[in-house]
Image (tube, rainbow, N blue to C red; front, side, top):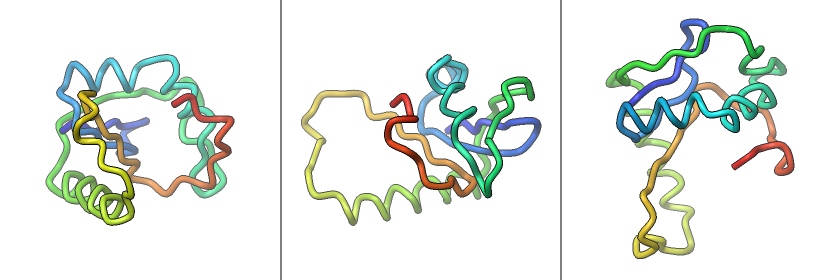
Amino acid sequence: MVTLEIAGKAVAVTNADQEQAQELFLSESFKDDLKSFKSEGRFLWDGSAALTTRPASEDEIDAFYEVLDDEDEDEVENDEDSGDINIDVVFLVSIDEIDDGTASG
């Protein structure tokens, strides 16, 4: 698992491998999301602070699985047979309400 840090602060974790995580976290669409998402009224990223990735800590991995377990309990449809590679991203900071038209993904 890989964690994204913005200016040294852990912001998100993914179950992607290092190469996939780099591609995802540094993609223009994800960067656009980071610039539009807010946490506690502040934008997650100002467009210039350093974005870095590193191996996730045990606490971050635990937080990732806790969120996914909660989502699985709420899941109505089973998408295991879709054939898609399942890469999940969990934010480690609280995200203010997201306008569905704002997120790229």
